[in-house]
Length: 466
Image 1 (tube, rainbow, N blue to C red):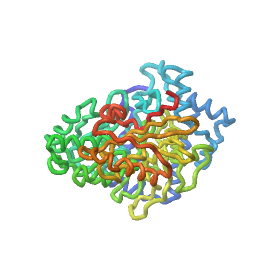
Image 2 (tube, rainbow, N blue to C red; image 1 turned 90 degrees about the horizontal axis):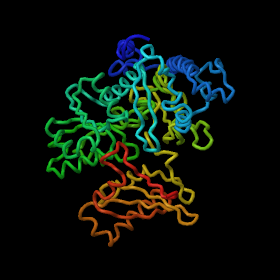
Image 3 (spheres, one colour; image 1 turned 90 degrees about the vertical axis):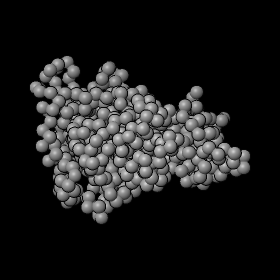
């Protein structure tokens, strides 16, 4: 294969196949059910054909007795066994240092395709290498721009990004999507480790940031820092829109912190790029069904879940036909499927967003508790900063969770007069099980959550095997 990265991507063809902006709303968004199915099936069969060329899939599928030609239609997807991070890490252990799931011959030198390499953040374990070819990299960039444009991003916007750089994909991905497929001005500040929070606030103020993109936890922290610096979000920093990863957080809380900014959610993982995003109606995330096949699987049995029932998000990425095909990747993220919203003009199914991780779930007295969901519950109470961390330990045969909760300045004095009891009672009511509560002052959970350093703060510390 000759030529460099951009020689391997026909952007005119790319935007014809995966359009953005008005072309998306007048094209794929309006496809009939039959037309959408035909498009997805064609792309799926091409993806499977590429999968058979990759050692990882030949081994994984062959162990189930499958042979090329067994998958003839989209409905045959259930015949293919899912895989998860476990199988990817096994591939790395057996075929160091890059594994054999990417389908790249690194010994081919100048004859091989261009490859972009990043890694996962390592939130759930050892960082995993992520590989992208030029085509699929640019398609996922366009799909993220599709979301931003749908949410109202304009050429006059100044976008402040708090996604991290380094080996992780986040900051690079967002930078490429905005610069390659929009005319907005980008401030690529990164995390608080890369650009100190106080400096980020000053940059937003100086350059008139109108949009913030990133993870909600740190965006909330920046609002606090702005006020500590004497700046009022929404007035001194004219942010009108925030697009990030809201999950089960209350968007109204984040909006209030940023002077009434409109909040949009979107979902994706490093292996896949963006999968789904909210539109103007903000009633569920539209799944980019022209680009992904999303299934919801029972976490224990792997069986498909009916619409509306929660389970693990399993994704096949229809455009990843060059480097690292992704076919039935079980993310272990929990959500469910919803029907299309006719009022939106988009005929794609939806999902409510990220509801937790099945492999980060804690079972307390028979009740499933997702630590990442507790932030939204704490947001329903006054006197708390919203920052917290869950510590799980074992006392005899009993699992015990202690939620360490930050209290606003001035509220600590009320701890002895019932604030701890109020938080405990609220969590017991909303979770359906009792948890212990420990109150601490502002900023005291930061060394545990590493909120200034990480894209995704640590919310669970498992002390059962310590």
